[in-house]
Amino acid sequence: MLAARLVRTGRHNGAMVHIALHNSDAAAEHREGVLHVWNETFGRVGDASVWQDTVWDRHRARADFRLATAYDDDRLVGFSWGYTGQPGQYWSDFILDKLGPAVQEWVGGHFEFVELAVLPSVRGQGVGGRLHDLLLAGLPHKRALLGTDDDATSAAVRLYLSRGWRRLGKQSPTGQVMGKLLEDD
Image (tube, rainbow, N blue to C red; front, top):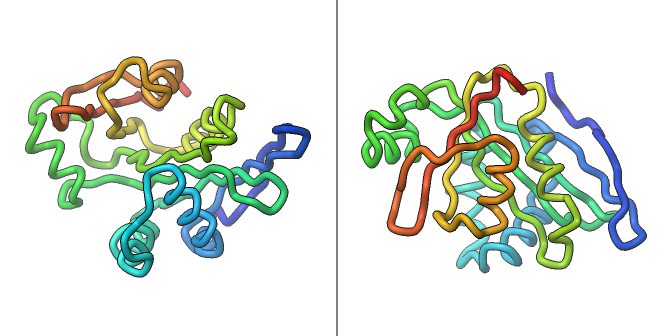
């Protein structure tokens, strides 16, 4: 069973950046750091307790939840998380409704790559790519899905394309669904 394991380190501005993978239980202790990075990356949440209930705790309760963290000394500078996606879950049902046949064979038992966030001061140092790779490492799933912006020039989309993801369709006017086959990784 995955608990927490240090995978690798690397330098960022002279400090060591430690990348580690955690299961749901071990992830709980990283909540404050994750919320800080979330606020700096995606914008402040209105109410931290609502975010904890509707996002953090709900996602940590999903099957096969895992969190990858990047620490520069004792400061969280990035994270990624995901879990097994199934019909009946909000996003799986949403993309089935929006994209239908284009994603039918992808949904159900897939790994849902939910979040990837890196502090602006650390971007461009390879931290996001390392978090991405660790989150997907050793998964038993055959496929993975994610939702992201639909701008081919964005850093996120460039990262995903460089890691073998492909566009499956639009989920909104500015968003897309991407898929990746994991069998060959």
